[in-house]
Length: 399
Ligand code: PLP
Image 1: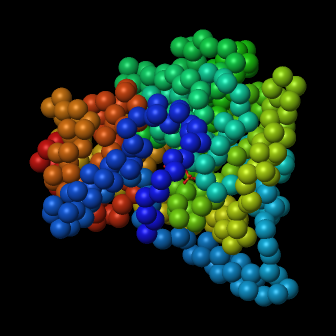
Image 2 (image 1 turned 180 degrees about the vertical axis):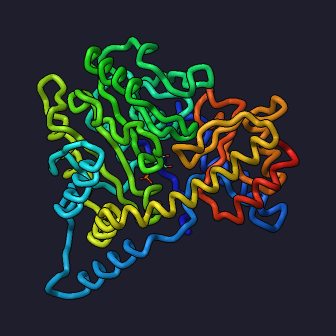
């Protein structure tokens, strides 16, 4: 145990942290849930935080075991992985994109340990540009940029505009725009027209789009899985994606960022800058994990992982049915594991969260994703079937 000392540490700290909202949303929720557990002596059912519940697919486990065995033999042992990913995984990601018509070079793909870290870290190579995020959206984009001292503006993606922000409502120059499709938390998915308009707007305004396609595997229609399905996106966009929700890798940790070689800012290659940043600050993803990711992205492996996605989407259908039966307005849940619903009886997001918790169910207050989320709550399809059924029936008394 440390004892109190007499010197006062006087290193200046990053004052931008003072500008962040109260606590990170999920930490705040965890605190309230802990208090529920202490009071009731049991855990609530969670349709809140977006973690998966199904185990890894067999193809992934087999690949991990084989890779672990290789690491245990002198002749196949490997030390530090390459900074940007092993060739075998970059190749598997390239082939994955080719299945929906996107042709990439391996050196445009940077393997990483999470879409969360990359979406925040990408700011390392950006200057003091104005940043735009949709509202509501995954809170990391905004918080990470506030920490870096950038000015962040929210663009409302509410019911009136179908929860999709249009480039027509955007007029800034040389800005950084975060887009997420399918969106967390609303489940809204951007169609080709809307994405083409964004690409046009980014190009004409000298802006950069940071596109988060972490939920691309959930798209069932013909909406783009990648921003690079849009002509010209390679000159104005980077794309961050992840196996967390595609293949249950939330605990395994593997993602990638695509940085096209055509992407230049004032003549400087963004691809080279990101390579420089990664090789300085990141030591790569483990061999075992990359072999697991390769298996998940193989044709057969992807089909196997899709079975878990189908299971979650059946949960989403059950959630939506329960909401429909009570006449509660909701959206999402079709191309996304998230169902976004209006709080009944005019309750605020926090009031509904508290009421749901008293019924033994954790949801996520919509206001935590931005002010346009006030009056909404998010339910996720990631729990087991039985827990989803139990949670929706427990909620029925307050819907
Ligand atoms: N991007 C979005 C939109 C998310 O919702 C999440 C997780 O909930 C992430 C990124 C995090 O992905 P990862 O687990 O790869 O860090």
